[in-house]
Length: 407
Image (cartoon, rainbow, N blue to C red):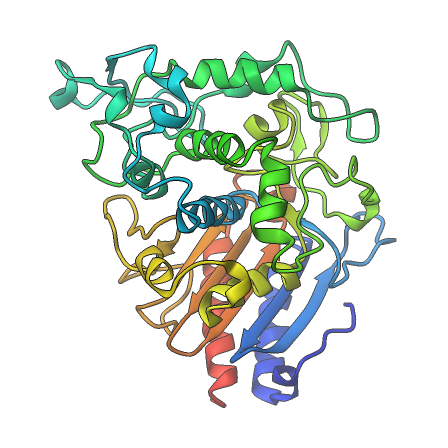
């Protein structure tokens, strides 16, 4: 265990509860954990537990260790888009084809089931859509932010973008423009999974296209746009795509899964998500690595209305209230706490918003309590079928709430 700090750890019940929780989940559910909690602007927990190399135990996890954020990347990229909205460079109701005109070249498109992002199997087509097609020019940016575009949840873009897996991160540059362009060309042709605007259907493809739109609107690559629009203004120094290529020692990052199907190596210092990796490590839906402290600071900028975020109170309010429902309750990019069985647990208020990542990461914000909890793990280290992460997330959030309320 590294030296965790913060006044919440002085609460004996909280400390005992945390130790018991870690005993149940470390290293079985995940070999590494970093936790940062901010309450009313003060960091009350900032610590890390476990090992970067659980087999040899030579490298302890530290509070500055970077974790693969997976889909928590999305809310950073979506926030960068909202800053462009605030700046008047684009509107929520603007069409995707206004920024990416090639998206409209294959039109109309049929509806098919797409692929399941976890099992990779093709999903069945809903019978009521047999005779329907989609006018892709009707997809607006608000549809992308709320996952109501009807785009497929997942497709194996990485196999269409390259002839093979990229080299390990210690060798050369991960990003190749040709990889991204080939992947983008495939995304511009995929059938839809359902009608536009009908319901929330979570889609990586939609946020990958949103990331491309951010890059074009800002001018240049997505990583530079994200730095200029969000990371640098908030003085967040750890979040980075392709950490090894950007000067971060691999030993300062937490490894994820052993990929025996494509890369034939453990993903360490490179993004776990195959589509992000295959397209060069820089994408809207996944790819960022960061410390828990900076993820929590990002959440705190939202709940505190930090002027450096450059979002009006109204736009922040709109982003964190329900805009659509279906598979999830969605704001503008943010997932909203579900009435039951939320990963935020029972005690976070119903006004809470957040996001989770497949690698075992999450950020939850309770605006009523002004409480932010960033929980970063590498639960996929043992494989994609790793269990218990959902129960751990609920338990840690409930433990935090009881701790700050002195219970």
